[in-house]
Length: 251
Image (tube, rainbow, N blue to C red; front, side, top):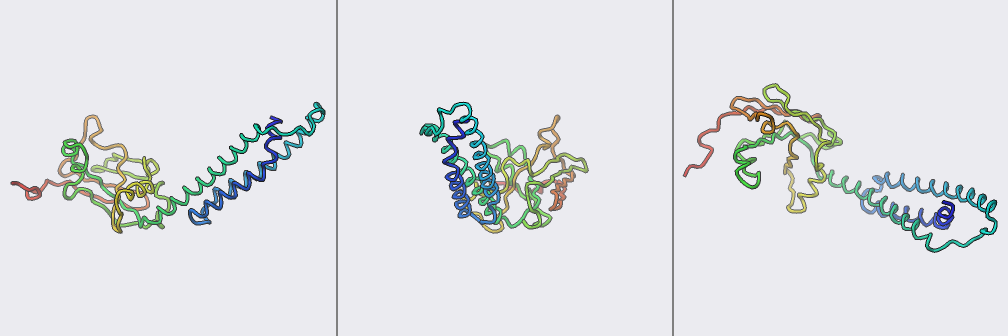
């Protein structure tokens, strides 16, 4: 432990300089005001450096008292590589954390607002084909509303309570913090393949509690009333009706 502390001593300001460079790099990635996390890391590392100096002094006194022959012993180069590597790693980690924060801020800026989507599925068609597209694309399916709550009104979209009732019976209760992929990740992933235009709606999916997963399954019937509510946004309510005869092409 004493040798490690002595090996660290000449590289304290080098480490601090690298962390500071990480802060500058993070600021280049986004708004300088959004790198508080990296700033905290910088302060912590500075305090840690001061603490190491204190421990070094203590270690020197103990060494000189018990082993006077080792006084002023040179530092072996092999001992320097580990702390220096740790310095680079922690510096890059600080930059990565701040950089990721900035990326999320930019992704959030392209989202105009949030609304409720009733992700209705025709289970027979959904399971009939390899993908779920047909089962989720029937006319009148996927109602949205009741309005668009702006991003400023919502704040953090990943802390919203979500509930669904069927005929007044609570079937689903969860939170958007349980999303497998958060809203910002969805925007990043989808925009890799195609351009997202103003007015595009991204449906994030549904929590557990769907009727097909119940034992026995409880599928929607004509006359059933569905109500979906998301905290901070509002609720939409839709009644299941018989499919009109003129909605499908008959050759």
